[in-house]
Length: 432
Image (cartoon, rainbow, N blue to C red; front, side):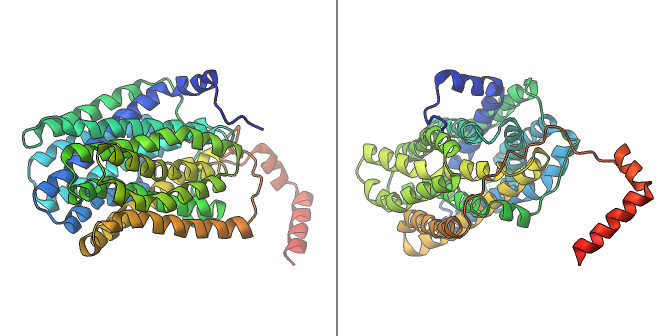
């Protein structure tokens, strides 16, 4: 049995080759989180309704959907490093275009393109990372990746307190962070995936491989989407100051970061589906208490956000690991796109639906959404665990690419009439 505790030397061995990769990821997520939270607060300060703000911010995740549907073509053509650099450069320019107007429609269009760029960049990073992992350490490596993303996001939330004049300092800071993020990824010595070997994958096949992973990605998108887009609005509507809102968002992401490594390590030594159930069980039981503790002072705000974050941010990497355990390297770019697509659907639908419920039924809808969707996933996963027992899959990562042209053996068989006739006879017998 694999030990649950990861020794320091083993952790160092995993992190060292990926250090440049993780640094670029952290800077990217820091910039993204700062921009998203600032825009959410800015629209609230400008008197824009909660429903309109939810639509504008959700346009970002619509861009994620477009990226999941099309970006893999560019990644497989240009390579992971060049594709990542191009998308982040465009995002850096789009950030500065928020200076031009504060019109919600214009911001919605910018958010659409920003979502496409970051969704494509994340597809590069996640497919690249999963080719470096195997079934014995994928949960741990994905947890380290998520720790990096949430550490960057936490720092981004703290940067909300930077003094700014009409958002100038915030926008410039975001653009600078994106630009610096290009450097470690562009200069990394980490081998990139072989883009000459590519295999497509349909959503139906992905669901057949891992129904829990597929549905879990959608539910994860709902959790993450409403936290990032509606979390600041939720706290503002409950009378919290900008400082307390920053504290709530910071500790929420921090909770997700601290839960990553133990949960990821646990998923490497047990059925990942049970880990998904435990995560949703925690959210189902604890999320409604946030509404009470958020009014009890700074410490209570921090603790409630920390617990909420522990459940919110750990589901996605476990779902991704569960899917990637069962596919080949040649399928990872397309699979990453589909998983991002599924999470994006949750990120779009979640904030839109919950923002409407918050507008009509009050802010309690924000925390109840966590319990409702967590409960539905528990029922779904229990059904498959009960009626579809776990299969012991082998590591299907190929050591050599499959040939794309007929081999000399095939030619010899094709020209051997006797063998060809025998094959036809066997095929007919099998068919009937």
